Picture (cartoon, one colour):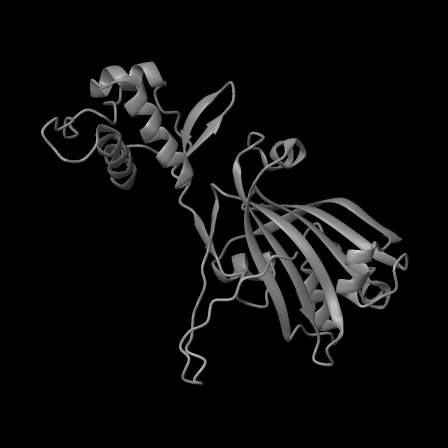
Amino acid sequence: MATPWWQGTEPIDRSSDLPYYEQIKRVIISSAAAERIAPGELLPGEHELCRIFGVSRTAVRQALGALEYEGFITRVKGKGTFLSDIKTRERLANRLMGLYEDVSERGGTVTSHVLQREYLPADVRVAEKLGVEPDEDVLVLERLRFVDGMPWSLSKTWLPRHIAALVEDVDFETGSLYLALEQRGVRAVRGRRILEAIVTDAREGELLGVAEGMPAMRLNSITRASDGSTIECFVAVHRGDKSSFVFDMDDPGDGVGMRLTTDTGN
């Protein structure tokens, strides 16, 4: 029988200035880094962790709460607490690319389950983003995206009809929207992306394989061609336990230093 991961670790130092929960957290993180705990492995329950570390349930709950917030563990209702996979750092928020291209650059594989693909009248907000008239038919494409077979994100994309007509023959189960458009002469050259912290609703949680109310990230995007026309807009919900987003910052060269802009709209 394999030796439990917690055996051989440093005991709780009751004279340390570090709170007990922080020490527990560090033990679990260091055990994961040393590969004594494997990604996806079920951790002991709260009562067992209290016994292992000789601390109160409050300290254990604080440690687990901090680990969950930082994405090191995932709690699944009715099943327990699991060590998360190492987060994949995505550059979607600051580069004009899709999930397919981003993951492919890292050697991964993206597949999709198409949940919706139909023409529907654009509401006022979508119409404004796409530069079309309200109630004009646009293509609505909703996909559950998988990275290396793991549910990763839930995205809904809106395309104006003249753009959608170019990709009517594309298999979006395995294909890339951006790649297909570029092959047809439509290239994204600029856009705007807004990243928000959210929690999953019941449907998002079920589709993404996490519990309702779990931390997630929502990416809102508008992408434009060289002539300024809008190619597409989308909203994508990414699992908070699987992804982190990387932002590159550059000095704009005008003497005012690096800028951080915020937006309250979607």
